[in-house]
Image 1 (tube, rainbow, N blue to C red):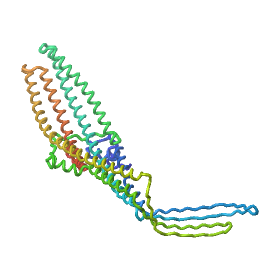
Image 2 (image 1 turned 120 degrees about the vertical axis):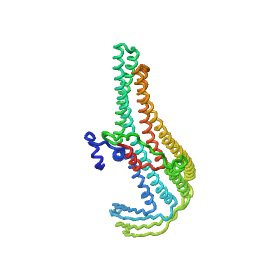
Image 3 (image 1 turned 60 degrees about the vertical axis):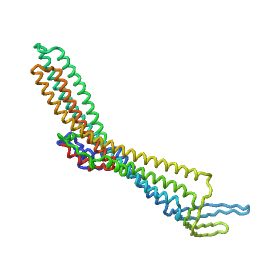
Image 4 (image 1 turned 180 degrees about the vertical axis):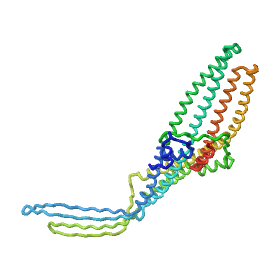
Length: 428
């Protein structure tokens, strides 16, 4: 596979001087993801349906020949002689209903292959973004836990010192020790989770994951435009790629019904044949003949198989119609869920932003209360836990809201490389 300058640069991830952004990782995934490569191969295979169907309406030319050695024995005489001949034939379909319907089905098959490739492109974009944000979220979680562990370590040291000088009970020391031990365990789990997330990203890009650009501070995620759920639902029911795929599948199923019914109709072919036969034996001859004309064919009865195939095609048509209806309903549901994900996510981010300010103020006040003797060290530990928990929740809400925005675009068939590039503006 041809590598771009970007992929060549990213292949030496150990020597990175600048972190990779989302669109760069997406480009690497497009070049190296096996699932997407399989989808591209399936699309190329689908493009061959039309040439194959067109071939059914073009002439077929065949050639045959023979060369024989013959021997005859009449009792009184015997003789050996040779014979040879060849023939050329051409058959040009003039009217075959089944071939015409096969050609229309082939064009619909190409449309379905294109929709499947577009679905694979959207799926790759969503998987890349999720893998990218999963790594960032795991990094944020680890950083938060490391800060929490450091703060707990300081609290533990202070608790031990206070107990030694007799101004605090052993309970404070045990509480701080328990919190510190728990934070150590959580840090180990977070490191493992980060490693797993990085390996998942590496599976997509086919190489060691480089450093990733994080989100900018105080990121502002815009509301969906248009900002009404019904507008997005209407777009999804009409433009969703699965819906479009199922529409083509329904039309192909209808064509299949017509194709099977076409087996009851006569066929008309143009036939041309030329032959040359030579015999060197008794009554030697050199016979040449040519034939040109129209040939009518009509299969009157075929043991009921054609009727059965028509019934089968009609049943498959009903199946395709139900699958289209299900796809429309699912696309509407996906659009609603993604829209609500963005709207509720933005509201949650706003609330958590304020909660972080409040919890930080509470922590500062609690520390001051500890200094003047109106708060205990356990109160400080609880306040610290609230701050760190809010920080993790805020980061998770931001990543999930961004993903919901991409899922909303995918629900209406509008997720592409430009949407991925737009997110680069939210990265450092």
